[in-house]
Amino acid sequence: MMQKFITYYIESASLQSITSFDMQRLFAQFIEDNFEDPDEVNKLLGDISWNEWKYEAGSDPSGTLNFETTNSKKAQQLALDYIALGGNSSPANYIQYNAWYSNLKVVFLQTLQMAGNATLAVVTKIDTDLNITGSTDPEVQFRWFSICLYLSYQNVYTPALNFVST
Image 1 (cartoon, rainbow, N blue to C red):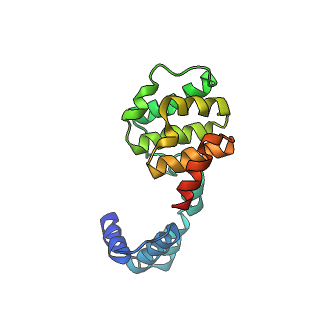
Image 2 (tube, rainbow, N blue to C red):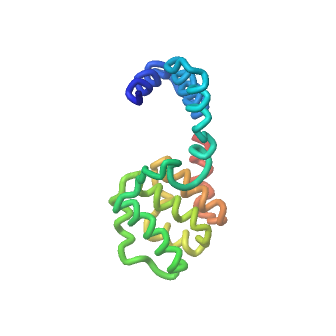
Image 3 (tube, helix red, strand yellow):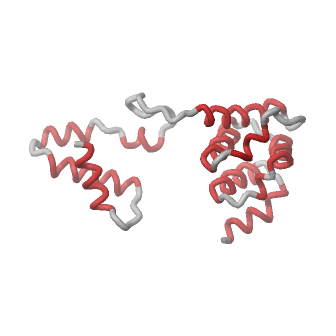
């Protein structure tokens, strides 16, 4: 049944941008088109907690999906190590950041942001070590500038202005 939905979804949304609301509408339409019993349709659609899936933190509702990898854990730990050092020194393995692909850098920055206790001294040290302000990756720039603007890290003011202007 899942393969049938995926085919339906691709055919319905081909060559267009859709939102999560569009996907939810397409899924409901698929269920209605493929199940004759209205009670079964209502039960299937009623069992899905879209708000939980889309807006609440934590595991997927079934608890079976896990997207952590060894490297994503290293990215999280590096952020936590920087915070723990308070901007006074660098973690021993900080240079590994430069070899990471975009998604791992995003994990690092999201961990830094979600920890909630990064300081101006911490982001200053990170930027000195890694020059994230000089990144050309828009995913990295967006997260880095958000963190730094919140902490009033003035070195990102001009690059952030240029980023949002383009």
